[in-house]
Image 1: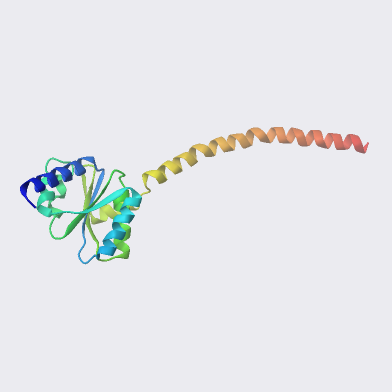
Image 2 (image 1 turned 180 degrees about the vertical axis):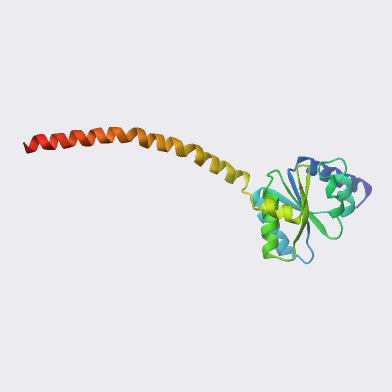
Length: 172
């Protein structure tokens, strides 16, 4: 890789760090190509990305970003998972690490907050943005459904009273 390619790589990583809401730093010792492909597929499905990075170039790209505190984690064979959704990258990385011991979560960054491995695992337990939206819509719809049921109940009672009176009149 010549100097121009390295500069382009650093610029690309720098823009990635500027745009991402969440970055997870991992070690991937021993992952096969198939396992790495599976991980990337899971990341893509969740709206996240997974990239193997060169440590020296990544450290240069981190300078001046909100994730500059992650600098010390880039030792050994590292890769990053990142996403715009604050939870997606962490959730996929932690779930994949549970089933495959070759992927080790070192830590990450959320906004300007630097997280250790336990912090990333805790963040992974939170619901995703889409799940939260679904719950919010459900909460907003529930009162409307209850109001409609309450408003229909008196009309039903009036209809039953009229029906009962009509049956009494026919019986007499």
